[in-house]
Length: 141
Image (cartoon, rainbow, N blue to C red; front, side, top):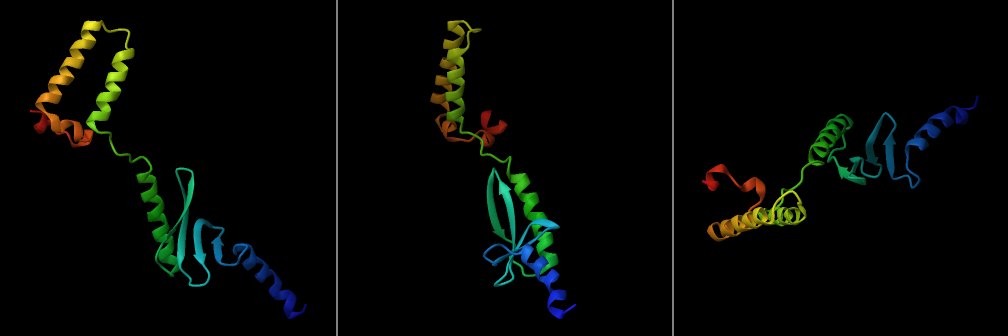
């Protein structure tokens, strides 16, 4: 065997982990980890809400990149379900729509609930600008 044929499997293996343009190196055993070849920085490539994003791990060290990648994935899993709660005014609008279509209530009961909302708006106008998680039991008293 010539020296050229001995190097061929290594170069083929190396070519398989490089992107088509040769700028990114992937790691088959850690699929979400990428390395930018020109400067050696590592990046995490993860899918968030169906969108593929690439985030810098801010390191050129392999072991640090693996640790930061797991932290990044954990943070993204926690943040995926985090949604800002609606404002009280949005909740009132939803309540009013549901109240209109509720056939189990008498018209007078619907009218009374709308009257209560009106009184609440007159006595506590700042409530309409608060988010639902900002309303405390102390504030309600």
